Length: 124
Image (cartoon, rainbow, N blue to C red; front, side):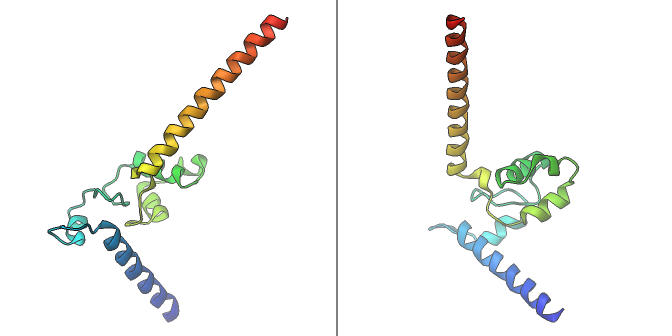
């Protein structure tokens, strides 16, 4: 039990260090931990307790968690799964690119299906 507790403490301190490193920017006038205490979502895009359930579910889906598993999960459980302080995927530029590519692929798929239907109608 002592070993497990020491690993938990070590993991928590590493998470805090990683969070502080990802939040710090040159010329920042206040320490990053001060922003976290306000309960507001920081620009760096981390999971915070003040996030709405819809945002947390979207983040969980982005991380590959099945939508069916998320239907009856409350906010506290979602926060536990996603880990408060961890990077938020949906707040990144890369995620915006993923979403735009998915949209583009869906549009191309629809066009291909429409062309296939037209081809079949002409052949019939």
